Length: 393
Image (cartoon, rainbow, N blue to C red; front, top):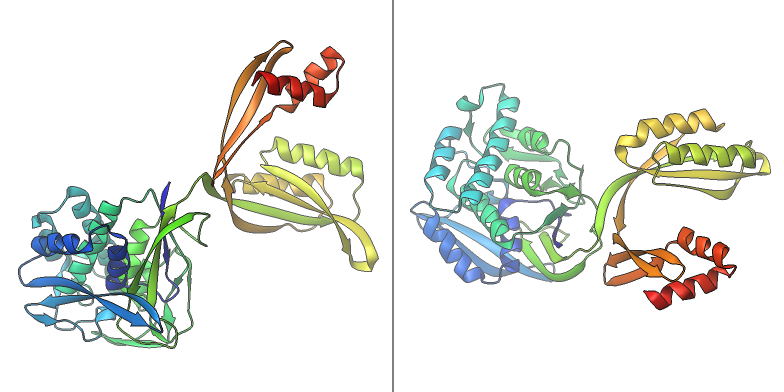
């Protein structure tokens, strides 16, 4: 599937996202022409080549009536713009843009409005957006929504988001980083401080990532085809860039749980029975690893892989059927090949073949139970049964 991976190790802002995605577009100039034609009068978006710490990328400029809104642009803190939520939504509704782009832009601004409403303790209809209500922020939101509409990734994955540290100056004064509205927009998403002081993630960036990203984590297994690089306004010791990787991701990927416990006082019979019960309770896999524990005791580590919804049932199962006093758990991503099967009719009966494809791999294997049945019935070895099935496949 077509996958977009957003690397936000230096945070995210609307202009950086726009620039990175624009580099992935097959015709950036035509896209900017179309975007500018749709934007309100007096607003113009342009792009230029830029470089941060030796990394070349694209920087986005937004001119409002011939002047660039550049002061503190990456933070969208424009004290002279106080626009109500209803005004912004009405402005978006009037634009002649694809319906899906319009719906996404409206959803992004509703996220921002709800966060501001919670921060200020005011109903949404009373909220006036200082930081994101200006025309340049509107241009960023529309650009990102439209670019993603045209790129049409089947999956959007985002890295943990660097938010920065220290303080930031905005319309309300000096605030801690992340600013209150940004913090609320980032709730439920994986974040970290990053390596630089200052505000790295803006409210616009947080709202856009929260709306579009399907999942967050490390780069998925994929075959990269392009990489778009968007540069920020400020210079840091670290290259201030956001990278967007575009490529093909095959197979399937899902978040699963890994449950572990160490046992030094269980018999082989007890372990075998516990494994049987764990599989019956819905474990994806159960296996043991020989380990050494305190007092030089040989022991085993039991590992259980399961879907998140099976967590509680399987933890209970571990406590019930083993002697462990504690269970460790980790969340991990599992990539799997696309699986299927087909059946071959042989002179000794049907044989099912399991298939697996993806990530440039294609393989198949005869079902063991079918080969074992043929071997028993024909009085031949398992290898001879396999050769017989292969001749007919």
